[in-house]
Picture 1 (cartoon, rainbow, N blue to C red):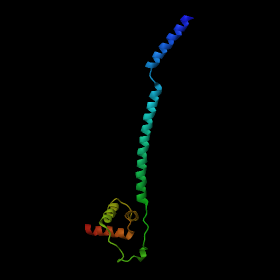
Picture 2 (cartoon, rainbow, N blue to C red):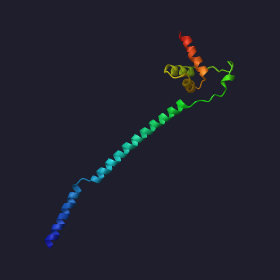
Picture 3 (cartoon, rainbow, N blue to C red):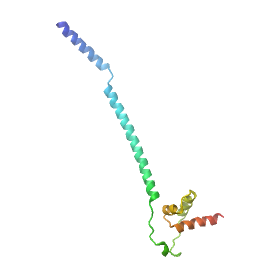
Picture 4 (cartoon, one colour):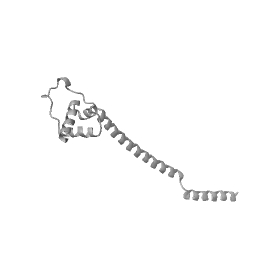
Length: 126
């Protein structure tokens, strides 16, 4: 009986020593899970930034500016001079192949003003 107790006690000591030197698989799994979570959070953050940029571009491109005056009531005296930045934007958009309506929407000019800017550039270029 005493030998059985000594044998069980020695077996317990051996198992205790083995448990100290054995790898902790739970800790490894927790570390892997944490690393994977950080990676996914970074990916989600980058995707959210890209979606925000795309939404801003979409709003800028498709935001029509309502006309304050009726086009039929505009006289040549009422037309304000077009700023050079707007002219360069119109010409740039025209060279990219956009339609006159799209250019007018993006530059907040009327279609007639857009045509006028393009014609003025053609006359200067010839």
